Amino acid sequence: MPTDTIYGLHLPYSMKNLVFLNNLKKRPAKQPINLLYTNNGQLQDLFDLKETELTILQRLSAIKPLTTIITTNEPSGQAVRLISAVNHPLLAKIIDNTGPLLSTSANLHQNSYLAEKSVICETFEGEGVNILAWNESVLSLETPSTIVDIRDNRYEIIRPGDVSREMILEIVSK
Image 1: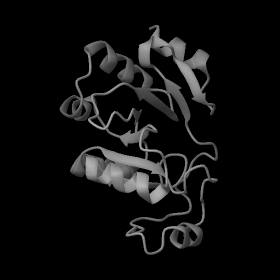
Image 2 (image 1 turned 60 degrees about the horizontal axis):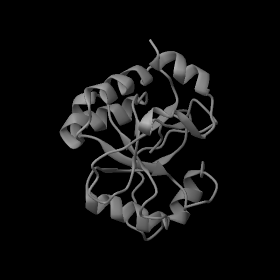
Image 3 (image 1 turned 180 degrees about the vertical axis):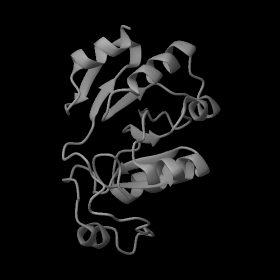
Image 4 (image 1 turned 30 degrees about the vertical axis):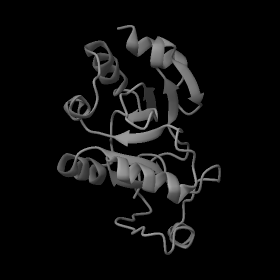
């Protein structure tokens, strides 16, 4: 299914699904994974976040596309990346019904992003992956989201995108 920037693989949040996605993509188990959510209440149900962390995440949700890395009490020890504002209407509706979704780009680890349905289907054929939604016009950006690590208040850009560090610092300092 599409995210706001690229096509992704999505599963409801659980340890079983986390292991499945890591194995499917042949990615390291300790690599951070995206968690899509629509409101901070969903995060409070999953993680022991401080009020200051929730406030920062709320402020950062105004910047798009931005992926934020935070420290969680994830039992696997895997860091979790949070996309705080889901703009895609279909994804938002699904998340509101199922709860947060694990999400990762529709490609194998350290390979280019896949943007064609036929290539995605071929790559994951026989792996238990179903294409639930496909609309070529839903992607609004060609660049994946900026990834910023806000652990320990360092605001370090991990992957550059359309959002600069200066934009992030301006929002969180308000």
